[in-house]
Amino acid sequence: MDFSTTATTTTSTAANGYSSPRDSSIPSSFTKFNSALTAGLLNPMSPPPPPPAMLDKSRASPTLFEMMSSESGSPVQIQNLAPPSSSRTTTTNGNGNNHLVISAQDKQALAMQRISNLLITRSPGSQFNDPASSDVKLTLSSKDGISITMCVHRQILVAHSRFFAVKLSDRWSKQQQQMAPSSSPYIVEISDCDDVEVYIETLMLMYCRDLRKKMMRQDVSRVLGILKVSAAIGFDAGVLSCLEYLEAAPWSEDEECRIASLLSELHLENVGATEVLRRVSVEASHNGSNDEVLLNLLHIVLEGKDEKARRDMKTLVSKMLRENSSGNDLRKESLYLACDGCLHKLKRQFLQAAQSDLENVDQIARQADNLHWILDILIDRQIAEDFLVMWASLSELSDVHVKVPVVHRFEISRVTARIFVGIGKGQILTPKEVRCLLLRNWLTPFYDDFAWMKRASKGLDRYLVEDGLSNTILTLPLAWQQEFFLAWFDRFLNSNEDCPNIQRGFEVWWRRAFWRRKEQSQEPPRLRIIASATDNS
Image (cartoon, rainbow, N blue to C red; front, side, top):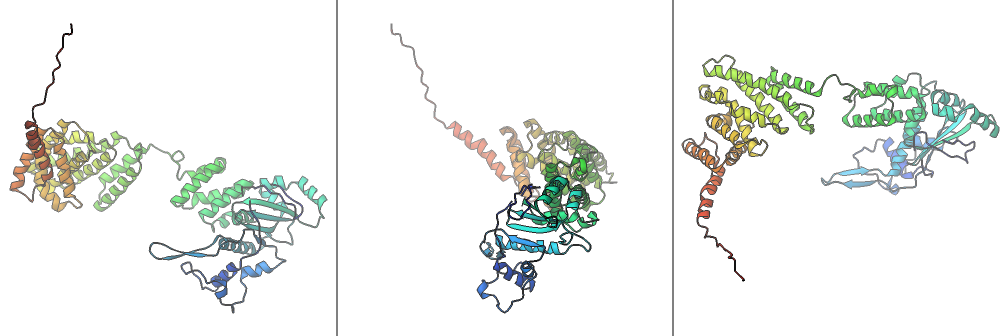
Protein backbone atom coordinates (compact mmCIF):
# COMPACT_ATOMS: atom_id res chain seq x y z
CA MET A 1 0.00 0.00 0.00
CA ASP A 2 1.47 3.33 -1.06
CA PHE A 3 0.30 6.81 -0.19
CA SER A 4 0.45 10.11 -2.01
CA THR A 5 0.47 13.63 -0.64
CA THR A 6 -1.53 15.12 -3.47
CA ALA A 7 -4.66 14.09 -5.26
CA THR A 8 -2.82 13.77 -8.58
CA THR A 9 -0.10 11.31 -7.62
CA THR A 10 -1.52 8.16 -6.07
CA THR A 11 -0.21 4.64 -6.20
CA SER A 12 -1.94 1.82 -4.44
CA THR A 13 -1.44 -1.58 -2.97
CA ALA A 14 -4.31 -3.56 -1.57
CA ALA A 15 -4.68 -4.18 2.06
CA ASN A 16 -6.97 -7.07 1.41
CA GLY A 17 -6.62 -7.64 -2.15
CA TYR A 18 -8.73 -5.49 -4.82
CA SER A 19 -8.14 -2.48 -8.10
CA SER A 20 -10.13 -0.65 -10.67
CA PRO A 21 -10.72 1.30 -13.90
CA ARG A 22 -12.04 4.87 -13.74
CA ASP A 23 -14.74 7.13 -15.20
CA SER A 24 -17.31 9.53 -13.78
CA SER A 25 -20.90 10.61 -13.78
CA ILE A 26 -24.01 8.76 -12.74
CA PRO A 27 -25.98 7.27 -15.64
CA SER A 28 -29.17 9.10 -16.39
CA SER A 29 -31.00 5.81 -16.80
CA PHE A 30 -30.25 5.02 -13.16
CA THR A 31 -31.56 8.36 -11.85
CA LYS A 32 -34.87 7.80 -13.64
CA PHE A 33 -34.94 4.22 -12.41
CA ASN A 34 -34.30 5.52 -8.89
CA SER A 35 -37.09 8.09 -9.23
CA ALA A 36 -39.55 5.35 -10.08
CA LEU A 37 -38.23 3.21 -7.24
CA THR A 38 -38.55 6.08 -4.76
CA ALA A 39 -42.13 6.75 -5.87
CA GLY A 40 -43.07 3.12 -5.33
CA LEU A 41 -43.78 2.59 -9.02
CA LEU A 42 -41.38 -0.31 -9.40
CA ASN A 43 -41.25 -3.74 -7.85
CA PRO A 44 -38.83 -6.63 -8.54
CA MET A 45 -41.37 -8.45 -10.72
CA SER A 46 -42.35 -5.43 -12.84
CA PRO A 47 -41.24 -5.14 -16.48
CA PRO A 48 -38.30 -2.86 -17.27
CA PRO A 49 -39.02 0.89 -17.32
CA PRO A 50 -39.61 2.58 -20.70
CA PRO A 51 -36.82 4.39 -22.53
CA PRO A 52 -35.83 7.81 -21.17
CA ALA A 53 -37.80 9.61 -23.88
CA MET A 54 -41.03 7.94 -22.75
CA LEU A 55 -40.68 8.69 -19.01
CA ASP A 56 -42.94 11.26 -17.39
CA LYS A 57 -41.04 14.50 -17.94
CA SER A 58 -43.21 16.31 -15.42
CA ARG A 59 -41.43 14.45 -12.59
CA ALA A 60 -38.48 16.75 -12.01
CA SER A 61 -37.85 16.33 -8.28
CA PRO A 62 -34.32 15.00 -7.66
CA THR A 63 -33.69 11.86 -5.66
CA LEU A 64 -31.60 11.69 -2.51
CA PHE A 65 -28.72 10.26 -4.47
CA GLU A 66 -28.91 13.04 -7.07
CA MET A 67 -28.92 15.73 -4.39
CA MET A 68 -25.94 14.17 -2.68
CA SER A 69 -24.01 13.89 -5.90
CA SER A 70 -24.66 17.55 -6.75
CA GLU A 71 -23.29 18.82 -3.43
CA SER A 72 -19.73 19.79 -4.21
CA GLY A 73 -18.88 20.52 -0.60
CA SER A 74 -20.03 17.17 0.77
CA PRO A 75 -17.37 14.99 2.36
CA VAL A 76 -18.84 12.03 0.47
CA GLN A 77 -17.37 11.95 -3.00
CA ILE A 78 -18.34 9.07 -5.25
CA GLN A 79 -17.17 8.39 -8.76
CA ASN A 80 -18.51 5.86 -11.19
CA LEU A 81 -15.35 4.50 -12.74
CA ALA A 82 -16.95 1.93 -15.00
CA PRO A 83 -17.53 2.55 -18.70
CA PRO A 84 -21.16 2.94 -19.76
CA SER A 85 -22.97 -0.34 -20.21
CA SER A 86 -26.13 -1.42 -21.91
CA SER A 87 -29.48 -0.71 -20.28
CA ARG A 88 -31.69 -3.22 -18.54
CA THR A 89 -33.11 -6.06 -20.56
CA THR A 90 -35.97 -8.46 -20.08
CA THR A 91 -35.53 -12.19 -20.52
CA THR A 92 -38.24 -14.78 -20.97
CA ASN A 93 -37.86 -18.29 -19.59
CA GLY A 94 -39.41 -21.46 -20.96
CA ASN A 95 -42.62 -20.84 -19.02
CA GLY A 96 -43.15 -17.49 -20.66
CA ASN A 97 -42.43 -15.48 -17.47
CA ASN A 98 -40.52 -12.22 -17.84
CA HIS A 99 -37.58 -11.50 -15.54
CA LEU A 100 -35.96 -8.10 -15.15
CA VAL A 101 -32.21 -8.22 -15.75
CA ILE A 102 -30.45 -5.14 -14.36
CA SER A 103 -27.34 -4.09 -16.25
CA ALA A 104 -23.93 -3.87 -14.64
CA GLN A 105 -24.11 -0.08 -14.83
CA ASP A 106 -27.33 0.08 -12.82
CA LYS A 107 -25.99 -2.44 -10.32
CA GLN A 108 -23.03 -0.11 -9.73
CA ALA A 109 -25.36 2.83 -9.30
CA LEU A 110 -27.42 0.92 -6.74
CA ALA A 111 -24.25 -0.03 -4.88
CA MET A 112 -23.14 3.64 -4.86
CA GLN A 113 -26.45 4.71 -3.39
CA ARG A 114 -26.12 2.12 -0.62
CA ILE A 115 -22.64 3.43 0.14
CA SER A 116 -23.91 7.01 0.24
CA ASN A 117 -26.66 6.05 2.68
CA LEU A 118 -24.10 4.21 4.78
CA LEU A 119 -21.83 7.24 5.04
CA ILE A 120 -24.49 9.79 5.93
CA THR A 121 -26.23 7.65 8.57
CA ARG A 122 -23.42 7.47 11.12
CA SER A 123 -24.21 7.08 14.81
CA PRO A 124 -24.76 10.21 16.91
CA GLY A 125 -21.46 11.47 18.31
CA SER A 126 -19.38 9.40 15.90
CA GLN A 127 -16.53 11.27 14.22
CA PHE A 128 -16.45 8.93 11.25
CA ASN A 129 -16.44 10.90 7.99
CA ASP A 130 -16.39 14.20 9.90
CA PRO A 131 -14.47 16.74 7.77
CA ALA A 132 -14.17 19.20 10.65
CA SER A 133 -12.11 16.92 12.89
CA SER A 134 -10.48 14.49 10.47
CA ASP A 135 -6.87 14.66 9.38
CA VAL A 136 -6.88 11.97 6.64
CA LYS A 137 -8.79 11.84 3.39
CA LEU A 138 -9.03 8.16 2.51
CA THR A 139 -10.01 7.07 -1.01
CA LEU A 140 -11.19 3.52 -1.67
CA SER A 141 -11.58 2.18 -5.20
CA SER A 142 -12.39 -1.20 -6.72
CA LYS A 143 -12.40 -3.05 -10.00
CA ASP A 144 -16.17 -2.87 -10.28
CA GLY A 145 -15.95 0.84 -11.01
CA ILE A 146 -16.50 2.56 -7.67
CA SER A 147 -14.25 5.14 -6.03
CA ILE A 148 -15.17 6.95 -2.83
CA THR A 149 -13.38 9.45 -0.60
CA MET A 150 -14.14 9.82 3.09
CA CYS A 151 -12.74 11.70 6.09
CA VAL A 152 -11.09 9.58 8.79
CA HIS A 153 -8.70 10.05 11.70
CA ARG A 154 -5.10 8.85 11.68
CA GLN A 155 -5.06 8.29 15.45
CA ILE A 156 -8.07 5.94 15.33
CA LEU A 157 -6.77 3.98 12.34
CA VAL A 158 -3.34 3.53 13.90
CA ALA A 159 -4.79 2.49 17.28
CA HIS A 160 -7.03 -0.25 15.84
CA SER A 161 -5.16 -1.59 12.80
CA ARG A 162 -1.64 -2.99 12.57
CA PHE A 163 -1.70 -2.29 8.83
CA PHE A 164 -2.43 1.41 9.29
CA ALA A 165 -0.05 1.57 12.27
CA VAL A 166 2.78 0.68 9.92
CA LYS A 167 1.67 2.74 6.95
CA LEU A 168 0.63 5.84 8.92
CA SER A 169 3.60 5.79 11.28
CA ASP A 170 5.12 8.89 12.91
CA ARG A 171 7.90 8.86 10.35
CA TRP A 172 5.39 8.89 7.52
CA SER A 173 3.46 11.67 9.26
CA LYS A 174 6.57 13.88 9.50
CA GLN A 175 7.32 13.31 5.83
CA GLN A 176 3.80 14.37 4.91
CA GLN A 177 4.05 17.51 7.03
CA GLN A 178 7.22 18.52 5.25
CA MET A 179 5.58 18.07 1.86
CA ALA A 180 2.29 19.86 2.61
CA PRO A 181 0.98 22.55 4.97
CA SER A 182 0.09 21.29 8.42
CA SER A 183 -3.51 22.41 8.03
CA SER A 184 -4.22 20.24 4.96
CA PRO A 185 -5.34 16.62 5.52
CA TYR A 186 -3.26 13.67 4.45
CA ILE A 187 -4.30 12.08 1.18
CA VAL A 188 -4.38 8.25 1.25
CA GLU A 189 -5.67 5.90 -1.41
CA ILE A 190 -6.38 2.17 -1.25
CA SER A 191 -7.24 0.41 -4.47
CA ASP A 192 -8.12 -3.16 -5.42
CA CYS A 193 -10.83 -3.53 -2.77
CA ASP A 194 -13.07 -6.55 -3.26
CA ASP A 195 -16.06 -4.68 -1.85
CA VAL A 196 -15.85 -0.98 -1.02
CA GLU A 197 -19.06 -1.15 0.99
CA VAL A 198 -17.68 -3.87 3.28
CA TYR A 199 -14.40 -1.98 3.67
CA ILE A 200 -16.29 1.12 4.80
CA GLU A 201 -18.31 -0.89 7.32
CA THR A 202 -15.07 -2.31 8.70
CA LEU A 203 -13.62 1.17 9.16
CA MET A 204 -16.84 2.32 10.83
CA LEU A 205 -16.42 -0.46 13.41
CA MET A 206 -13.19 1.23 14.55
CA TYR A 207 -15.33 4.17 15.66
CA CYS A 208 -17.88 1.96 17.42
CA ARG A 209 -17.81 1.38 21.18
CA ASP A 210 -19.99 -1.76 21.24
CA LEU A 211 -18.91 -3.98 18.36
CA ARG A 212 -21.09 -6.89 19.44
CA LYS A 213 -24.25 -4.79 19.29
CA LYS A 214 -23.22 -3.46 15.90
CA MET A 215 -22.61 -6.98 14.58
CA MET A 216 -26.12 -8.10 15.54
CA ARG A 217 -27.50 -5.98 12.70
CA GLN A 218 -25.48 -7.87 10.09
CA ASP A 219 -26.03 -11.18 8.35
CA VAL A 220 -23.55 -14.03 8.00
CA SER A 221 -22.52 -13.08 4.47
CA ARG A 222 -21.70 -9.50 5.44
CA VAL A 223 -19.84 -10.60 8.59
CA LEU A 224 -17.66 -12.90 6.47
CA GLY A 225 -16.71 -9.91 4.30
CA ILE A 226 -15.91 -7.81 7.37
CA LEU A 227 -13.88 -10.68 8.81
CA LYS A 228 -11.79 -10.91 5.66
CA VAL A 229 -11.04 -7.17 5.63
CA SER A 230 -10.37 -7.08 9.39
CA ALA A 231 -7.89 -9.94 9.12
CA ALA A 232 -6.16 -8.25 6.17
CA ILE A 233 -5.63 -4.92 7.92
CA GLY A 234 -4.87 -6.40 11.34
CA PHE A 235 -8.05 -5.14 13.02
CA ASP A 236 -8.00 -7.63 15.90
CA ALA A 237 -11.11 -6.32 17.66
CA GLY A 238 -13.05 -6.68 14.41
CA VAL A 239 -11.77 -10.23 13.89
CA LEU A 240 -12.80 -11.29 17.40
CA SER A 241 -16.23 -9.69 17.05
CA CYS A 242 -16.81 -11.48 13.75
CA LEU A 243 -15.76 -14.82 15.22
CA GLU A 244 -18.03 -14.32 18.25
CA TYR A 245 -20.93 -13.58 15.91
CA LEU A 246 -20.25 -16.62 13.72
CA GLU A 247 -19.94 -18.89 16.75
CA ALA A 248 -23.41 -17.88 18.00
CA ALA A 249 -25.39 -17.21 14.80
CA PRO A 250 -27.22 -19.93 12.82
CA TRP A 251 -25.82 -20.87 9.40
CA SER A 252 -27.32 -22.22 6.24
CA GLU A 253 -25.55 -25.12 4.52
CA ASP A 254 -24.16 -22.80 1.86
CA GLU A 255 -22.89 -20.38 4.52
CA GLU A 256 -21.36 -23.29 6.41
CA CYS A 257 -19.14 -24.14 3.44
CA ARG A 258 -18.12 -20.51 2.99
CA ILE A 259 -17.29 -20.10 6.69
CA ALA A 260 -15.15 -23.23 6.80
CA SER A 261 -13.35 -22.22 3.59
CA LEU A 262 -12.63 -18.66 4.74
CA LEU A 263 -11.41 -19.65 8.21
CA SER A 264 -9.14 -22.23 6.65
CA GLU A 265 -7.79 -19.58 4.28
CA LEU A 266 -7.20 -16.94 6.99
CA HIS A 267 -5.52 -19.29 9.53
CA LEU A 268 -7.17 -17.74 12.60
CA GLU A 269 -6.86 -20.76 14.90
CA ASN A 270 -5.05 -18.76 17.57
CA VAL A 271 -7.77 -16.12 17.87
CA GLY A 272 -10.88 -18.27 18.21
CA ALA A 273 -11.56 -19.84 14.82
CA THR A 274 -11.39 -23.31 16.39
CA GLU A 275 -14.42 -22.51 18.55
CA VAL A 276 -16.37 -21.53 15.46
CA LEU A 277 -15.40 -24.71 13.63
CA ARG A 278 -16.46 -26.96 16.51
CA ARG A 279 -19.93 -26.79 15.03
CA VAL A 280 -18.87 -28.56 11.84
CA SER A 281 -15.44 -30.07 12.52
CA VAL A 282 -15.29 -33.74 13.46
CA GLU A 283 -11.84 -33.31 15.00
CA ALA A 284 -12.91 -30.34 17.10
CA SER A 285 -16.07 -31.93 18.52
CA HIS A 286 -15.07 -35.57 18.55
CA ASN A 287 -16.16 -37.25 21.78
CA GLY A 288 -16.48 -40.80 20.46
CA SER A 289 -16.32 -42.85 17.31
CA ASN A 290 -18.91 -42.42 14.60
CA ASP A 291 -19.63 -46.11 14.91
CA GLU A 292 -20.68 -45.77 18.54
CA VAL A 293 -22.91 -42.77 17.84
CA LEU A 294 -24.65 -44.41 14.87
CA LEU A 295 -25.05 -47.71 16.68
CA ASN A 296 -26.71 -45.84 19.54
CA LEU A 297 -29.04 -44.18 17.03
CA LEU A 298 -29.95 -47.58 15.59
CA HIS A 299 -30.84 -48.94 19.01
CA ILE A 300 -32.95 -45.89 19.85
CA VAL A 301 -34.92 -46.30 16.61
CA LEU A 302 -35.29 -50.06 17.06
CA GLU A 303 -36.59 -49.67 20.62
CA GLY A 304 -38.78 -46.61 20.04
CA LYS A 305 -42.35 -46.71 21.38
CA ASP A 306 -44.16 -44.41 18.96
CA GLU A 307 -44.69 -46.26 15.68
CA LYS A 308 -45.16 -43.19 13.51
CA ALA A 309 -42.04 -41.56 14.91
CA ARG A 310 -40.13 -44.81 14.40
CA ARG A 311 -41.11 -44.94 10.74
CA ASP A 312 -40.09 -41.32 10.21
CA MET A 313 -36.75 -41.79 11.95
CA LYS A 314 -36.03 -44.99 10.03
CA THR A 315 -36.47 -43.06 6.81
CA LEU A 316 -34.24 -40.26 8.07
CA VAL A 317 -31.44 -42.51 9.33
CA SER A 318 -31.51 -44.57 6.12
CA LYS A 319 -31.24 -41.39 4.08
CA MET A 320 -28.27 -40.12 6.09
CA LEU A 321 -26.46 -43.45 5.88
CA ARG A 322 -27.15 -43.69 2.16
CA GLU A 323 -25.70 -40.22 1.55
CA ASN A 324 -22.40 -41.31 3.06
CA SER A 325 -20.99 -43.25 0.14
CA SER A 326 -17.78 -44.20 1.96
CA GLY A 327 -19.57 -46.52 4.37
CA ASN A 328 -16.77 -46.09 6.92
CA ASP A 329 -18.98 -44.54 9.57
CA LEU A 330 -20.69 -47.77 10.69
CA ARG A 331 -18.88 -51.08 10.87
CA LYS A 332 -20.36 -54.29 9.50
CA GLU A 333 -20.03 -55.92 12.91
CA SER A 334 -22.12 -53.18 14.54
CA LEU A 335 -24.97 -53.64 12.07
CA TYR A 336 -24.98 -57.39 12.57
CA LEU A 337 -24.89 -56.91 16.32
CA ALA A 338 -28.13 -54.92 16.11
CA CYS A 339 -29.50 -57.54 13.71
CA ASP A 340 -28.75 -60.37 16.14
CA GLY A 341 -30.61 -58.58 18.91
CA CYS A 342 -33.76 -58.23 16.78
CA LEU A 343 -33.52 -61.81 15.53
CA HIS A 344 -33.18 -63.19 19.06
CA LYS A 345 -36.37 -61.38 20.15
CA LEU A 346 -38.19 -62.52 17.01
CA LYS A 347 -37.30 -66.18 17.53
CA ARG A 348 -38.34 -66.16 21.17
CA GLN A 349 -41.70 -64.54 20.52
CA PHE A 350 -42.41 -66.58 17.36
CA LEU A 351 -41.81 -69.90 19.09
CA GLN A 352 -44.10 -68.82 21.94
CA ALA A 353 -46.82 -67.91 19.47
CA ALA A 354 -46.43 -71.29 17.78
CA GLN A 355 -47.35 -72.84 21.15
CA SER A 356 -50.49 -70.69 21.31
CA ASP A 357 -48.92 -68.21 23.73
CA LEU A 358 -50.02 -64.93 22.14
CA GLU A 359 -48.86 -62.60 24.91
CA ASN A 360 -46.83 -59.76 23.33
CA VAL A 361 -47.40 -61.35 19.94
CA ASP A 362 -47.21 -57.91 18.33
CA GLN A 363 -43.45 -58.11 18.88
CA ILE A 364 -43.25 -60.54 15.93
CA ALA A 365 -44.30 -57.88 13.43
CA ARG A 366 -42.22 -55.22 15.18
CA GLN A 367 -38.96 -57.22 15.12
CA ALA A 368 -39.61 -58.44 11.56
CA ASP A 369 -40.01 -54.81 10.51
CA ASN A 370 -36.75 -53.94 12.28
CA LEU A 371 -34.96 -56.76 10.45
CA HIS A 372 -36.42 -55.59 7.14
CA TRP A 373 -35.00 -52.10 7.82
CA ILE A 374 -31.56 -53.40 8.79
CA LEU A 375 -31.55 -55.62 5.69
CA ASP A 376 -32.14 -52.55 3.52
CA ILE A 377 -29.09 -50.88 5.09
CA LEU A 378 -26.97 -54.02 4.60
CA ILE A 379 -27.99 -54.26 0.94
CA ASP A 380 -27.20 -50.58 0.36
CA ARG A 381 -23.73 -51.22 1.76
CA GLN A 382 -23.31 -54.49 -0.16
CA ILE A 383 -22.74 -56.56 2.99
CA ALA A 384 -25.99 -58.57 3.14
CA GLU A 385 -24.55 -62.00 2.28
CA ASP A 386 -24.21 -63.06 5.92
CA PHE A 387 -27.81 -62.05 6.58
CA LEU A 388 -28.98 -64.33 3.77
CA VAL A 389 -26.99 -67.25 5.18
CA MET A 390 -28.46 -66.63 8.63
CA TRP A 391 -32.04 -66.27 7.37
CA ALA A 392 -31.86 -69.34 5.11
CA SER A 393 -30.80 -71.44 8.10
CA LEU A 394 -33.82 -70.57 10.28
CA SER A 395 -35.59 -73.88 9.71
CA GLU A 396 -36.77 -73.84 13.34
CA LEU A 397 -38.99 -70.87 12.46
CA SER A 398 -40.07 -71.98 9.00
CA ASP A 399 -41.13 -75.39 10.35
CA VAL A 400 -43.60 -73.85 12.83
CA HIS A 401 -44.59 -70.96 10.59
CA VAL A 402 -48.00 -72.42 9.81
CA LYS A 403 -48.86 -72.67 13.52
CA VAL A 404 -48.77 -68.89 14.01
CA PRO A 405 -51.83 -66.89 12.90
CA VAL A 406 -51.18 -65.25 9.55
CA VAL A 407 -52.12 -61.83 10.83
CA HIS A 408 -49.10 -61.94 13.13
CA ARG A 409 -46.60 -63.74 10.91
CA PHE A 410 -46.90 -62.18 7.43
CA GLU A 411 -44.35 -59.47 8.26
CA ILE A 412 -41.72 -62.23 8.36
CA SER A 413 -42.46 -63.06 4.74
CA ARG A 414 -41.75 -59.42 3.86
CA VAL A 415 -38.16 -60.06 4.92
CA THR A 416 -38.05 -63.11 2.64
CA ALA A 417 -39.52 -61.05 -0.20
CA ARG A 418 -36.82 -58.41 0.26
CA ILE A 419 -34.17 -61.08 0.01
CA PHE A 420 -35.71 -62.37 -3.23
CA VAL A 421 -35.59 -58.87 -4.68
CA GLY A 422 -31.97 -58.44 -3.59
CA ILE A 423 -30.91 -61.75 -5.18
CA GLY A 424 -32.92 -61.01 -8.33
CA LYS A 425 -31.16 -57.65 -8.76
CA GLY A 426 -27.72 -59.05 -8.09
CA GLN A 427 -27.40 -57.13 -4.82
CA ILE A 428 -26.80 -60.26 -2.71
CA LEU A 429 -24.34 -62.84 -4.04
CA THR A 430 -24.10 -66.19 -2.26
CA PRO A 431 -23.36 -69.80 -3.29
CA LYS A 432 -26.16 -71.74 -4.98
CA GLU A 433 -26.49 -74.04 -1.97
CA VAL A 434 -27.46 -71.09 0.23
CA ARG A 435 -29.99 -69.83 -2.32
CA CYS A 436 -31.49 -73.30 -2.61
CA LEU A 437 -31.70 -73.63 1.20
CA LEU A 438 -33.51 -70.29 1.36
CA LEU A 439 -36.14 -71.52 -1.11
CA ARG A 440 -36.58 -74.90 0.57
CA ASN A 441 -37.15 -73.35 4.00
CA TRP A 442 -39.00 -70.15 3.21
CA LEU A 443 -40.74 -70.44 -0.18
CA THR A 444 -43.81 -72.31 1.12
CA PRO A 445 -44.30 -69.89 4.06
CA PHE A 446 -43.91 -67.06 1.56
CA TYR A 447 -46.68 -68.55 -0.63
CA ASP A 448 -48.91 -68.95 2.45
CA ASP A 449 -48.54 -65.29 3.41
CA PHE A 450 -48.58 -63.72 -0.05
CA ALA A 451 -52.30 -62.87 -0.03
CA TRP A 452 -52.01 -61.15 3.35
CA MET A 453 -48.87 -59.27 2.21
CA LYS A 454 -50.73 -57.85 -0.77
CA ARG A 455 -53.60 -56.59 1.36
CA ALA A 456 -51.84 -55.48 4.53
CA SER A 457 -48.38 -54.27 3.45
CA LYS A 458 -48.45 -50.66 2.34
CA GLY A 459 -46.08 -49.89 -0.50
CA LEU A 460 -45.51 -53.52 -1.46
CA ASP A 461 -44.57 -53.74 -5.14
CA ARG A 462 -46.06 -57.09 -6.12
CA TYR A 463 -44.47 -57.15 -9.56
CA LEU A 464 -41.02 -56.34 -8.18
CA VAL A 465 -41.29 -59.19 -5.68
CA GLU A 466 -42.54 -61.64 -8.32
CA ASP A 467 -39.71 -60.70 -10.65
CA GLY A 468 -37.20 -61.11 -7.81
CA LEU A 469 -38.54 -64.58 -6.99
CA SER A 470 -38.37 -65.62 -10.66
CA ASN A 471 -34.77 -64.48 -10.96
CA THR A 472 -33.82 -66.16 -7.69
CA ILE A 473 -35.06 -69.53 -8.94
CA LEU A 474 -33.43 -69.00 -12.34
CA THR A 475 -30.01 -68.57 -10.68
CA LEU A 476 -30.09 -72.26 -9.64
CA PRO A 477 -29.03 -75.27 -11.71
CA LEU A 478 -31.66 -76.38 -14.22
CA ALA A 479 -32.72 -79.50 -12.28
CA TRP A 480 -33.36 -77.41 -9.15
CA GLN A 481 -35.26 -74.84 -11.20
CA GLN A 482 -37.57 -77.62 -12.37
CA GLU A 483 -38.38 -78.63 -8.79
CA PHE A 484 -39.41 -75.13 -7.71
CA PHE A 485 -41.22 -74.10 -10.90
CA LEU A 486 -43.31 -77.29 -11.05
CA ALA A 487 -44.29 -76.83 -7.40
CA TRP A 488 -45.30 -73.24 -8.17
CA PHE A 489 -47.27 -74.38 -11.28
CA ASP A 490 -49.36 -76.74 -9.22
CA ARG A 491 -50.02 -74.18 -6.48
CA PHE A 492 -50.83 -71.37 -8.92
CA LEU A 493 -53.49 -73.47 -10.68
CA ASN A 494 -55.24 -74.13 -7.37
CA SER A 495 -54.98 -70.68 -5.77
CA ASN A 496 -54.41 -68.09 -8.46
CA GLU A 497 -55.09 -64.90 -6.52
CA ASP A 498 -53.26 -66.04 -3.41
CA CYS A 499 -50.08 -67.08 -5.23
CA PRO A 500 -47.41 -64.90 -6.83
CA ASN A 501 -47.34 -64.96 -10.62
CA ILE A 502 -43.89 -66.01 -11.77
CA GLN A 503 -44.98 -67.05 -15.24
CA ARG A 504 -42.12 -65.18 -16.88
CA GLY A 505 -39.55 -67.22 -14.97
CA PHE A 506 -41.48 -70.39 -15.73
CA GLU A 507 -41.30 -69.65 -19.46
CA VAL A 508 -37.56 -69.04 -19.26
CA TRP A 509 -37.08 -72.35 -17.50
CA TRP A 510 -39.29 -74.09 -20.09
CA ARG A 511 -37.22 -72.78 -22.98
CA ARG A 512 -34.02 -73.74 -21.24
CA ALA A 513 -35.25 -77.25 -20.41
CA PHE A 514 -37.04 -78.28 -23.61
CA TRP A 515 -36.48 -76.04 -26.60
CA ARG A 516 -32.72 -75.91 -26.32
CA ARG A 517 -32.56 -79.60 -25.44
CA LYS A 518 -34.54 -80.34 -28.60
CA GLU A 519 -32.32 -78.09 -30.68
CA GLN A 520 -29.24 -79.84 -29.35
CA SER A 521 -30.70 -83.29 -30.18
CA GLN A 522 -31.47 -82.23 -33.75
CA GLU A 523 -28.00 -80.94 -34.51
CA PRO A 524 -26.43 -82.77 -37.52
CA PRO A 525 -23.39 -84.85 -36.81
CA ARG A 526 -20.27 -82.80 -36.98
CA LEU A 527 -17.77 -83.51 -39.78
CA ARG A 528 -14.59 -84.95 -38.37
CA ILE A 529 -11.41 -84.42 -40.38
CA ILE A 530 -8.57 -86.75 -39.61
CA ALA A 531 -5.22 -85.96 -41.10
CA SER A 532 -3.15 -89.04 -41.80
CA ALA A 533 0.56 -89.08 -41.97
CA THR A 534 2.04 -89.74 -45.40
CA ASP A 535 5.24 -91.59 -45.88
CA ASN A 536 7.39 -89.56 -48.29
CA SER A 537 10.28 -91.89 -48.30
